[in-house]
Image 1 (tube, helix red, strand yellow):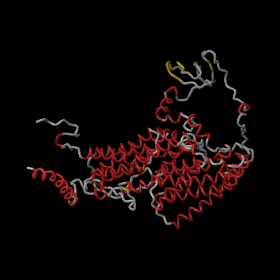
Image 2 (cartoon, rainbow, N blue to C red):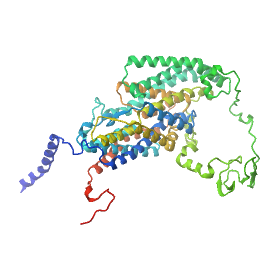
Image 3 (cartoon, rainbow, N blue to C red):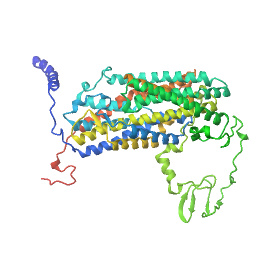
Image 4 (cartoon, rainbow, N blue to C red):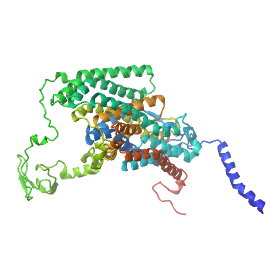
Amino acid sequence: MATQTSMGRFMLPAALLAATLVSVASKQTDSPEVGVPGLYKGLIVWAFFWAFLDAFTIGANDVANAFANAVGCGTLTHRSACMVACVFEFIGVIALGSNVTDTIRKKMVDVGLFTHDPYVLATGMSMVNVGSGGWVLAATLLSMPVSTTHSVVGAVLGIGITAFGWNGVVWDFNKKGFLSVVASWFISPVMAGTLAAIFYMTVKILILKYPDEVALNRGIKLMPVYMFFTFGTIWGFMFMKGIPALKKAPYSTTIPLTFGLGVFHAILGFILVSPWLRRTITDKENLPWYTIFYSPCVGVGSMGYYTTFAAGDEEKAPKPQLAPQQPSQQQPVQQQFPGQPQMMGYPGQPMGTMGGYPGMQQQMSPYGMPVMGSAFGLEDLGKTLAPGFYRDIGAKREEDAGLHTAAFQADSMVEEMFKFLQLSSCCFFSLSHGANDVANAVGPFASVWGIYSTGKVEKKAPVPIWILIYGGVALDIGLITMGHHIMAALGNRLTLTSPSRGFCIELGAMFTVMVASKVGIPVSTTHCISGATVAVGMCNGNMDAVNWRLFAVIFGGWIITCPAAAFVTGMLFWGVVSSPKPLPTNGFFTGSVPTVN
């Protein structure tokens, strides 16, 4: 009896081992669905919907992260940042977006394992959009900037592990497997932070540390030099990372082009930008921004001058004459405008009637003028769909006062010079992002579409133009409706931002991504910007100038992104693929009720 019990203990492990060996040694066989296009229409509709969510969250998190510094330091308002980003992201998607993408992004899983069951891969890729988009949405609502690329990588890991176990994933660092992604959590911020700190310290030593007028003159004189480095880096970034068609171009082509374009922009800086900055900042000419392109042709003083007041002298500025108000008692205010019906109501309060429409509610401004669109509830609708447009996203918070006090601050007129460089780097950064990172969302859906169209698995999935447009629109909607979460969290909360700091942060991040993409080190633009921001904050010489608690939360988000996306996606994939499949003959999904025997 004891012998039988002892043998029984080893029967189950032996059986499991034998089953494992048989499954490993067995050969895969083609599913009857191989080569049959147009199957599972519900799957393609499902994937279409979740691809929108994934692209939506990329806009809300990734794009917003790239513009957070520009909004925080006042170079752009939240609304103008969204408009600029939407335009350049969409141009990047349509004009420069790759029309071919890897079936499985970053090749973490061997696509050949799915060639015998193409629709299983299609189901998995649809789940990638669900898991990745769901995690990035949660991170956005928590105001955590995360890498959308790593979220997609984690989701793909979940598919590979669920389908084929731990051996179904490429782990080797030398093969650019998952360990290389882990390494990038540390490589990205350190590289970008080091470069951004070097750039900022040169600006600080050469310009910012001098008295205001001296610093301003030195900055204007050095502007062509900074334009050389800025636009040289921008064009190098576009050649090596931003424009997919040129990623494999030889150095003999890209390096001379990069250097030549850097010199060209330095010449433009000497001829156009420096004189324009001198006239607008030093001489206080009221020149619109677009005159920078033909400033030598604009007569001196032809557009007038503006007046600035030193700190504490604002009371000397002429105050606008407003219409008299009645602060003591709110009596109906009556104003008559030529050619308009008489309007009555309280300043800033809804009016009961207007223009012959009883009951129409019209919001009034403090000047007695109606707020456009308020009668139809358009303002309320705007606040619901795009709340960031109605908030001061870049405002400094009282709880961060100690953080900002510990930071070095230069004269506002000196900082004004760097807005041009920061805005330029933001625009090109956004252009590159649209050309590359939108594939994180549309890549999995393109795989589903390719399998649905052909019934086969291809290592490279062609991306139709309508899918790129679809992803670009979803990305822009995500930025407009939810981008304020990340912009508000990063703006001035991680460290004090300014145009000079923001320009160095974006330059360091771009240079890191450019170099790393050529040498094969996987880096994330999100990690680069966050790391560069912290490093520039440390250049204040005071560790209290950095919000280390917030950085710890952000770093924790980087680490948890891959496992969280992998777990969610793997569970969904397992539940759907291994679930019962109803027979069509039983009437499921046909729209008719079968006869019950």
